[in-house]
Length: 321
Image (cartoon, rainbow, N blue to C red):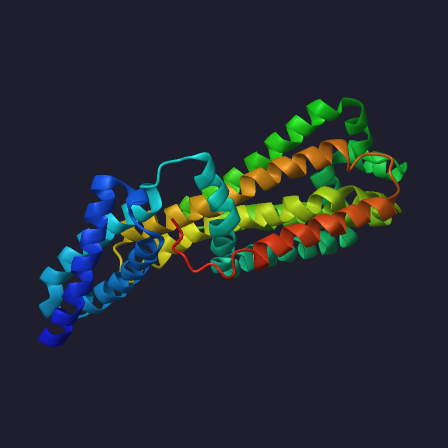
């Protein structure tokens, strides 16, 4: 049973959170100092833990209702109350997004594993059943590979148009993986596995046709950005599914709202990456540069990109607002 002493002790923290919310609502978040912003984030997380404890005790129902409303206000203030500005966008990508990425790394790894499982299945089925390969790729693409011609050669003559089409396709796949999260994640799982199967089938077809070097030297420069971005979009969809299936101490509706907010922020980081990947895929990947140069460029891009995701903002302890 919740003790009166505990309630009195926690009440002062809730009152302080309410005061900070009142100030930010009346004067804007900019009126809070950096210390107060850090305090707001800390009090918000503590209040969420307090609500979990109160919901497990019948005597704390009235306090739980109050705290639930307070947390809703805090959530809206922290995640929706900041006015958009060029600096806020820079701050999001410079400080906030790498932390969001690392916080959802387990879901991103799940998306990667689903893709790999699909790729392995595609490789095995293509190697043992040629009709499966033909059904996936079509006779025209199979014929092109058999004649040692890359189907990507046509991109070279229409680079701007091809780049635009590629970006549109990549964004469509990513948004679909994200949106299918509303199916409790089932649709997202399908998207990850299906795209993995497609990669496995293409890789196997090129291997049989002696075109592996041509394929991977084409894929590498943009793939080091495109594939992680699609995995991130998949993780965003899985985050929505997680919120639906495992609400925890929240109501299912509140859990879905919170998960969706996190998922949208996770997806937001993938969009500019896909745009850059589309430009590379349309202009550089299909070019006649030697494979060694393409792999070198891919390696440099990968080092910069993953250094940003895994090491950027590690020393920043400010709240993610």
